[in-house]
Length: 341
Image (cartoon, rainbow, N blue to C red; front, side, top):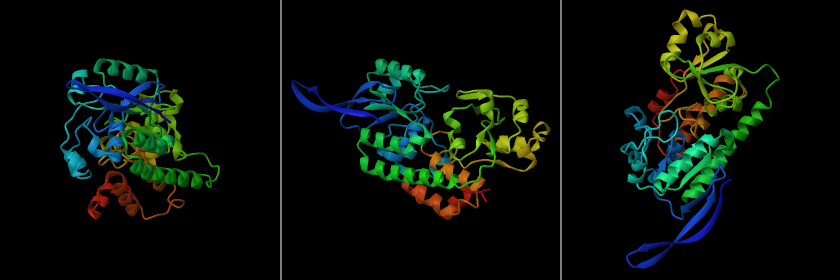
């Protein structure tokens, strides 16, 4: 939970001082940050923060980390479809310069996701170079509701944040209540492959694979150790012999089904290879943000169809209306759920 303290700052316009409210907050990394009382324009450091700001206050989003393609735009409100691509500050693909940040004229920079010394150091560096307050938010899946409420309070959209957070609380509670009824059988063993070759995955503790734990499965790549995303070999995956493969990329799903070196894996032999929907944001990962609430529902239906019974198409429409503020057509729902039983 972020801590807020209102202070009085003086902004000089012409010769006369004008009083303006500011707040001192403590972010998820324990950093003390002075932020404006009214936040109207936000630069996001990475994709999870972009989704977070979009669902809470799309009018405050200064630009995208990556421009949505035509397919994704059909699932976004019109006002954000043509926003500029500002670039990203975090991750291997960091592309934005300090000058680009200041040119975007944001009130704050927001990052949501893993909070560790590396991200803390980046926040301090960028804030020092740009003079723009940089706020780090814990984006772990278990804290989804708290994340929504914290950021809603930060940027002045508490009512909407509470509405979304209540949905998140309800969904996660329903999930946990139903999982508690499952027999104590061995958990399904899952491999999650990213990229066209499927050989990037997440280790134990990776934020990208959090919902595997959330839905009661075992990440087979945890055998390789603790950490974030990493590259593995096909021989390692064969040795892990997962029951289910989740493919971030449809090309990898096709490869796993046709390449002889994957043929002996239980998931391949049983035809248990799945590609999660990804419009306008990935349901499973890509990015690991609040969008994963729907990924959990998808995984529930995939793993435990007898336990989680509902009108899934109706659930999808409800989520998109509430979070993305779009009314899906039946054709759009059919596109999203293609291949989902």
